[in-house]
Length: 131
Image 1: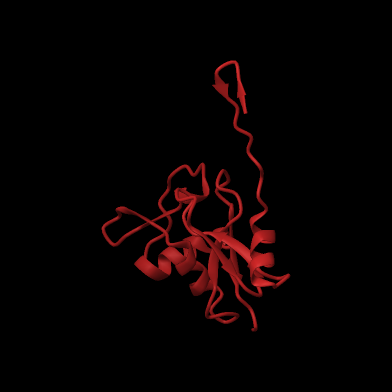
Image 2: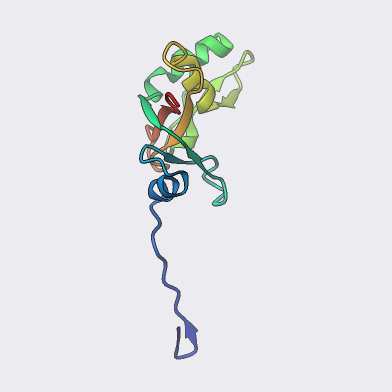
């Protein structure tokens, strides 16, 4: 639409879970954004089942991985989590690894799912569940 020489763009919200459910023909399918900074990184998982949260266990995960704890930094987004490595240097946490470590007794295929980028506790752990 062109008004007074300026282009007006209308955005249409897309429910990515519904898109996955429709394309997979699975009412339990869920969408996962693999990389917040890449709009083309959406993935669909069949039979999605929420395992639970992970941020309360990240300090234990850091101790398991590096024999240290979480880096003592202010966290403003879900991507701000870091461990301290063996040399006390901050290193980013692969949340999927943390999910697989914590939920190993429930699921070997656990993965992260970003629920809210703007919150440090914006992560959840999910599984594809039984097929």
